Image (tube, rainbow, N blue to C red):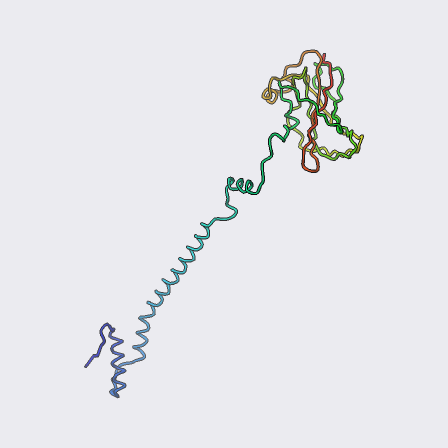
Amino acid sequence: MPTDRHPGANPHEAELRASLQRSAAHTPLPGIDAAAVIRRSRGRRTPKLVAAGGIFSLAVLGIGVASVTGLQNLGSPFSGTAGSSQESATDSGLAAPDAATVPVPADRLNPCGGSLAPPSTDADITLTVQFPTEAAIAAGSISGQVTLTNTGSDRLVASSAAVAPVTLSQDGTVLWHTNGPMILSLATIDLAPGESFSWQASVLPAHCTDEATLETTAPESLPPVDPGLYQVSAAVDLSLPNGTVRQLLGTPADITLR
């Protein structure tokens, strides 16, 4: 029987081709089911097509994964470092406050053993202390008050710490100042011309050589001062509505300790 196979053709394709040629020549070939041969041929090709489709899907998936990874590597606008934030602030014209224009907080203004800061020269606000002119050293803490008075012609609106720090000094040298935990609250100040606002205060007739001694030693363990003439003064920080801070230092008042 002649095969008439083309080079590289599989047996079923060659058999189908021969069958078709005989059919065209009206020479029937019994026992060959052309439809079955075609089904078998398609059945062999289907796995190859599925495999190719799978490889294509994986390729697309790979592109998708690479794209996501690439986007992640581009970075996020929220993943900058502190350095870049500071640089942005500098580039935008923002500047850190000038340390020379920011006053030392009132409770740190007169450190132990240092020189007493001079009083303020504000003409429209005065800060005074009211303490006994004489007191016993052995009695311990001496009670008094600090008073802020609006001596100007405009209304004064501000806020301040709930405690007004006071300082005990002698001949311009700081011996003791208010220390310890501060009350975490604010005093609201709203004064018409001539009105006053007062803080309760106390002073301890003792002395410390430096800040470390004051902060690590119990008040009752600090050495008492000697009998003599001393001065008590106060300082407060006023936070104004425009965001600025106005610092006031009162004129020292004499107190005799015996």
